Image 1: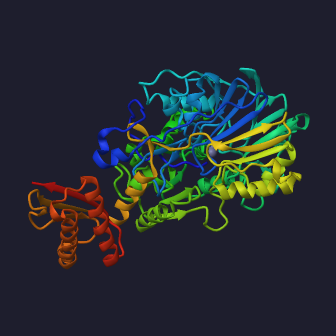
Image 2: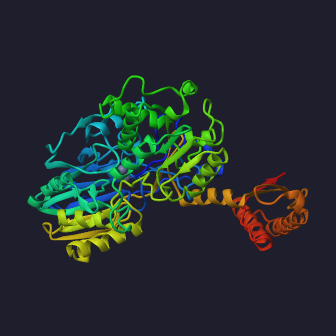
Image 3: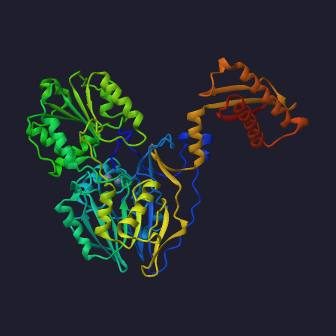
Length: 604
Ligand SMILES: [Zn+2]
Ligand SMILES: [Zn+2]
């Protein structure tokens, strides 16, 4: 998946821990609770168990568990960035409680490629699941190790490199790998051999093709499935709802080369995802061949360029890269800047340029900006603002929607690519993954059509669904019981399980504001000592709503009188509850709003 720049890059998490840390204080912390987890019995002898712990109700936090007899293989460990409905958190993790309970059986974490939705959770979970060895290809391994350096308090991880079509045995399970096309080099699919047939996990996948005909390399790679008996396929569903074939990256390369080679008057700024490593390397090399200089802006972009250089994926002359401080020393038409933030990320390089807060760089009217990315759903407004602020400064902007220019291509295959892949692999059973529920559903329909699979051979999972292949490989079922699935999140330096109540509170506070009512009660008479105090933020402007506040005070007064009538001593919690619900009801009726009402009763 394309990836945004992490929101708070500079933050160095301390030791992750579960639980309720005091930083949120009182009411909210007490609502942050750990769901009671029940342990799940192991599969019956001979059954194969598959649990998608994440990535099947979203695009993000991919993680799949394959369990057979005494062995568990985990594939991928990604995280997800926060969404609009989870305010205040940094990342969402897969819930690994099931793996923590079965850590003795875990033989390995196998990682398909280096995107954060596949590697992001590693620093947060490895220690909890017993720190098994991580098997992956070279580039992915380097990216995992680089990230881990930011978590120096954690035990060392054991990353082992997989080469080519090498076959290894983990526990009692033979495993081999195959190369797949995606936006980052070294992406691979995984084949786990079982006595009932192979389990194939594609990872993120698209096809390299010319006008709908896969290239010779693709055809050769997939020919390996002709000899295999595939029991189960788990496959990327992200773009299966899109018709036809996706734009091949080679088209993007052609367009970028045209843009780079065109005579320019000003500087060329290319905003893209740092995870688009193949494209970055191509741009740099093309720029160099035209005698242009490259400036790299944004931390994740710098890291990835450095990794590509270290691994020899990127070769360049010594003077191709110049620091942004020296930009004025070169003629504008010789400068190409690669920048993060094409999604409108608040702190990324492009946003700083748009907001004129970049330390060394100011846009000039002849500059051209290429947004070499699509807009991730949810980021539309941020990207609009970014484009507005950039064009206000006179820059010319090219996006993937500008005319027929292919300045971006997705990393996930469209419908016809998926169909072609199904026909090469021809599995007996199918579990769509990597997508929202609708995308999985579309993918399930497609495979029935493309290889004539029966509906009963398909399971569309939810996160933490337990799926088993039973009866010696004859049928696939989803168990009634789920693996633990409470929402696990990273907030600053801690990992916690958030209840729905907490998220609802945060949304209410953000949308409707709050109101604190303080009732001071005379213990002897049971009457209000003085008129109740009302403190409010984000609800209504109190000074302009004195009438409403006076009426609210009357409601409080009435409620207190009822509660403490005839010397009654009500339970304090119940009294508070009664107070807040009568005030909430009244405010809803008067204003059609539901601010959070926090009652405070002081008795003197
Ligand atoms: Zn992905
Ligand atoms: Zn990916």
